[in-house]
Length: 235
Ligand SMILES: O=C[C@H](O)[C@H](O)[C@H](O)COP(=O)(O)O
Image (cartoon, rainbow, N blue to C red; front, side, top):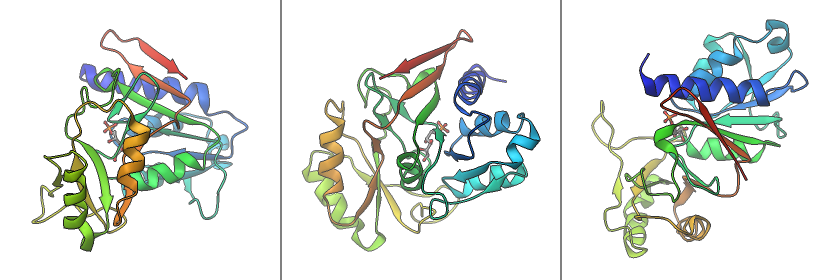
């Protein structure tokens, strides 16, 4: 296993061990490659405990992971109060603000994170920054209603993201289509010193569904380090 994969695994395992309690009945499960290790750790719990627990996924991917593991899935319509949600991130700043949506899943992720009493981030050392935009330079993922994408792109450029662009699919002609049937624009803004303001400005553009800036949401973040240790950051 590569160093990066080991780092993801250590962070994920420790977060599950410290935040998923036997008394919990509803657990939110994020998306991405780090969350694969979250689900692996959940599957190592007492099967009787898992049988009494409902897991709320945040994407087609995480739903598949949970179902493949034989776990019971639910949604926020059934379970509006979640005990804890654990999710990955593309970058986390010193205040625990995060960029998410590298896998185009941030709309459902934000809903499931907001429904949780506690939101926990797991990541490897490459995601650990002082200021957002230091390491994640692809831009802020912005989910948009398809017919409005050009209008939103223009507004994002006017807000200072000159290189904002529609995310294109890799093994399909045309744009990435999210699990919700929308498009994604990646909007680089350089260093983001005031993420909450940036979030508000982008969200006010008509046609924007959700912005991959998670501000003042995470309570704690676990970063797997290159030396095999795990760094914990709290508010
Ligand atoms: O849309 C995807 C999600 O926000 C992921 O949680 C994020 O991209 C981090 O993914 P990974 O753990 O693969 O780096």
